Image (cartoon, rainbow, N blue to C red; front, side, top):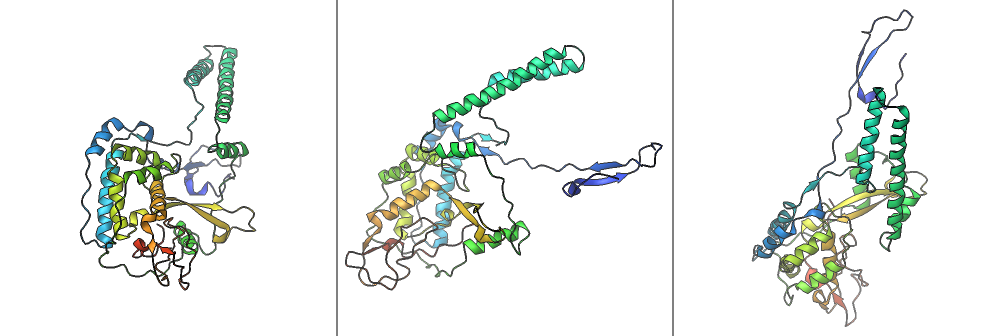
Length: 379
């Protein structure tokens, strides 16, 4: 007879009756289990220790390449990716790495490190009969009481500094976190099938018009000013979750402070040609279950929140697209392309006109983005 369960089955390697007999009618078995190879979390960047003293002069002297004279969507994508890579490489190569850990304790102090060493030291001496159990017990109790005290002090300091941004974090910590719900969808068993099912439900493919061979340059589009970028960056929160690039908004604020010409020179060609690059259509998606659903076997029982590829760039897009630089009077009825609104990309505010209605004389349309194709599926 052996004791096991289905959760232990993947780690079962082999067994054999190699142990000597015990004199009873039971046989001892040697069971060999293979421990799983735990994949360590990927290395991240410790943005608190970015060497801005070394980066700032390099950013100040950095000059981006000239955009193509007759750009195609592909060539403009390549130019944007190349220019953006030059900026991000300077920042990431001068930022130390850090490996995130689920065991990180913000309440830990150097005093606790010393008490832990004393506790383990006295425990080893007690096992060797070189000290009394009372002394080892005192060291253990002192160590665990200090841990509880450090947790209370850290929690009190956290509550004392709660503001409008962190009040919801305090509420979630106090209420506790519900266990994660594993996705089990109908007709989808593997992670790839679950991913495809969710994409088909939340982002169904839509036919998009073919992109133009040559992106036309719209007239009367003034260049992006550094003051406009500064105004948009001020609206971006430093604590917003970064997208696939992993670069938070606080870093982009420092980049713009070091060289006010870089970000405007990136956005000016995009506005001039009315093009939305593919690099800014990517996002990290997080699937959350909706509370109170009768079952969680369909995609409609879940919702997706996304972190745009570069969240400060999203605020820049909103600022530019809501400014008067992108609007001009347009006579006659609006076409479906001229009133196209992407609620997923965050590019435009909602338009109150449909493609079959004629706007009043004072109506405006986003004429500078008429060549923008339909928003593709998020990757």
